[in-house]
Length: 473
Ligand code: NAI
Image (cartoon, rainbow, N blue to C red; front, side):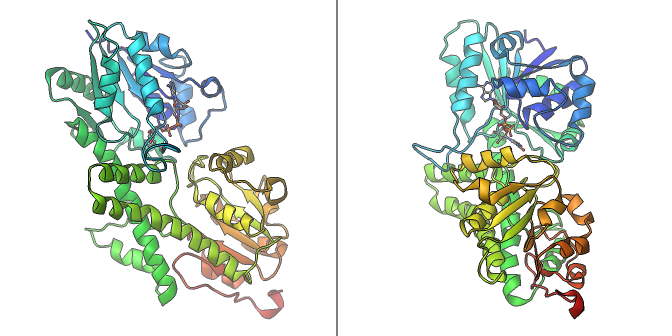
């Protein structure tokens, strides 16, 4: 007696918003309710200024909102109304207590589960969309069942989300796979079938995998660990390239042609960021330790450690090149988001780089097409990083203003727009020697050296200015 014409999702964030918008678009026969405790977030979802930037999202929301896509703060009311409930609340790393700095903080999850338990008056299918540690479903089951309502049955499914920010709408429309895990008993298999039917409205059946609960939960952590591990691996090699005269782009290309390795995710950079990679690996590390597997834990911990090294290394390179001091020097920062095509700044490498530079006295002028200064400041606050922001951290409306009278340009996000700028004009506006540090290897470094920049990138030897003498000052 599960009603399938309505579904709810608790958590209207980067995952809940785009996923539910896609379900609404692809399943016009289903009414979709996206719920959140944050008034301001829901208000933004109901406005013309959506709370998150994601290419293509605006159009889908406009198409479906009010038709079969609804955003509301009435969490308990809609939980009562809907029998199929996705949960995509945030699961940050614990900041204190047991497992601090590594384990996932499931407090938000427990609250959501308790809310479902209190408001359920019939059977419910609860779907974990958040990334959670293995066996979370068992804990959720206990919370739900502790409410002791005789007629109320709960089935918990795991349906981890594999979308990547910046390409979320494309990923949701054409996923590589949809992963559904569920209990092996009859109720579990019945619930799984209902969820398969929802996705089968637009995803080819052979791309919808069903597994047991624990495989599904663990697969999400492992997918992120493998992806991040590729980045840390190529970044580790980039350091060796810088010492030996090899070029990491050439190395990546050469190894990527091996079909067993493949070409994707082999761009050396200042480091990975985002709310997921670090959190999920730390979570995996914590799990391994708690299950008595210290060597496995250490192996994956190294992926995160290498990322820290890379961010510090890049910053040291900047300071070294600029005659060992950035004190009171104006530096233009291009990009603060953790990657292109998103306004998300969680765990962005720019945070570490900017902090280290400000500690050394630099004055930063930041431009990012999608991030606001307030959001960047919040990121510093979230990490308890204190600086004299009024004197050292300026926000600019465009790249050109950031560059005026600066000693260096740092590329920290790979926004496509950064490739199209007139760098020879920029150089004219800068102090000399004009430095450019490409933390994402997106620019034509030879051309920049010809223009007169001193160019430092990742995994390649630095290039001195090759401009004629009369143009070099
Ligand atoms: P988010 O922080 O953007 O959104 C979570 C939302 O849940 C917030 O708006 C918060 O107000 C709301 N919330 C928290 N507790 C609530 C409660 N009890 N009742 C109602 N609303 C509540 O987080 P995001 O990025 O959407 O991530 C959610 C989960 O999905 C995380 O576990 C994350 O690891 C996972 N994930 C994230 C991906 C990403 O690219 N951001 C990709 C794949 C998975």
